[in-house]
Structures are given as structure tokens and as C-alpha cells.
Length: 291
Ligand code: ADP
Ligand code: BMX
Ligand code: ZN
Image (tube, rainbow, N blue to C red; front, side):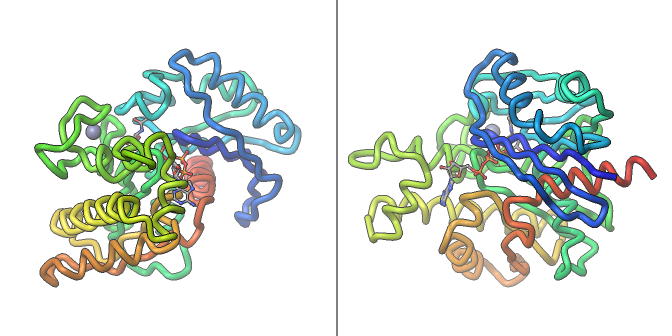
């Protein structure tokens, strides 16, 4: 059965048709509108998925935000232009006329990565470093979503009590230091106004302040991973998102993690499914839901 899979991130929307063997075709992307009114997101989603609808039989959505009863609730509304609340399942069912389900993007990606060829652990954690920092936790082979959908929101654990205030209202979250938006927000001087991608390009060319911003993100992520190991005893942590997958980033995280005592070390891997982990994980979960 062909699934119309949709991944809603703070920076980009992706959609594709995915068959039961998890082959991806007709993948499309559009920038996420930054607007606090739901209409803009609805219109962009409609334009994104319209050409794919005739071939699909169901919709599987991986989305940024806490997903509760099919609705997106922002924990950090700044990542979505101030949008607080969006009825995901209802909107996609009305656009497509197909049954839809929704799950948090990092939880979905964790589920896909748990099924990737190289993973044989019962416990694993996925972390996306992207517009925000998200997480998904698999314990004893079960994806943890939590009673209210909050499980795995690792970007909102404490990195620095004196750090910047996070969009969730808490001071010093990992997300407020390590995410793509945070890297851009901390940029000064000739880096001011650039996005994380441009700052990484500067870092690659040896620009020292850019290198420091990237290193600070990587160090913060390494500390988070040590905390995650202490909490879950997971043997494997998989990192995705465009910052997480950027050239040279994960090797820096590994270097910082190596400086921690060995009890906190994990197998650190880039996402096997790269930028498609969310699309594939939502599809896998929708297949499971139908069985
Ligand atoms: P989303 O958050 O929508 O899922 P991404 O995973 O692409 O999207 O993350 C978006 C963030 O990643 C933005 O802050 C963007 O500037 C940054 N980014 C995109 N491409 C790169 C890259 N090649 N290197 C470093 N950062 C990148
Ligand atoms: C934020 C939060 C998480 C999400 C994470 C990564 C919102 C809107 N999102 O912490 O639910 O998983 O960002 O999201 O509050 P992404 O947009 O970077 O993929
Ligand atoms: Zn926060």
C-alpha cells in the first residue's frame, strides 16, 4: 500500500510516496512558512502534497512539535514562526481524503533508525540537530512517546543554567545553544544574520568565530549524549538533521564525548537514512498501526 509520507520541520517540509518495501519516490521539498497563523502552513502543505495524492492510500506525518491526538503543539513556537497549535491529522485528512496519522519527527526518525541494517541494539536514542534539537528513544525495542507526546524531547534538557532563554520558556536548554537556530542567533560581527549552513561554510574555510560556534554546539551535544547514556544505558546514539549530518560535525561530537569518562561512551553513528529518517519512520509506524 503506497503511503504519502510528510516530514514537517522548522525549516523545510518534505513529502514522498513510499511503498511497503520502503522505496521512496517523487520526493518533494518546500520551505516551511514562518507564520503564527495556521493558514500558511495549511496552504504550503496542500501545494506540497497535491501531486502525490492520486497514488497514495494513506498519509503518515512526522512533524516537529509535541504530537498529541493528531495535533501539533509547539514546545518552542519560535521554530515555527510563532505557530502554537496546528491540527495535523484533521488538515491532511481534509486535503487528501485519506486516513492520516502523525508522530513527532524525531520519534519517527528514531523508529526508522532502530530498523536500519547496522543497528542491533534493544536500546537506542536518535538525536536530530536541525532547526531545533529533537530526540527519540527506543527502550527494549519500544518507541517511547510518553503519555502526552513529550518523551524524548532532549533539546529541552538543561545544558547551561546561565545560557540563553529557550523558546520553550526555560533558560539554558540544549536547543538554545546547539541547534541550527541557536548557532545563527549567537553569531556576531561578520557572521551576524547568516544561517547555520553559511556559518558551517565559514567554519570549513577556517573562520575562527564560526569554528567556535560549531564547536560549542558539538560540545553541548556530547554532554547531552553522556546524560542520555546515564539515563538509558543505550549502547548506540544516532545523530541526524542537517546540522548533525554536516561535514565534520559528528567527528567533533565524538572528540568531546571521548573526553568524558568511558562509562558515558556510546557507539555514535550518523543517521543511516540521512534526511529521510522521519519520512520512513512515520511510514513504518503507519504500517504497524494498520496491522
Ligand atoms: P528541519 O529542521 O526543517 O527538519 P534541517 O534538518 O534541514 O531541517 O535543519 C535546518 C537547519 O540546518 C537550519 O538551521 C539550516 O541553516 C541548517 N543547515 C542546513 N544545511 C546545512 C549544512 N549543509 N550544514 C550545516 N547546517 C545546515
Ligand atoms: C523542537 C520541538 C520538537 C522537535 C525539535 C526538532 C517544536 C515546534 N519542536 O525541540 O518537537 O522534535 O524541535 O525539530 O516545538 P526540527 O524542526 O528541528 O526537526
Ligand atoms: Zn527549551
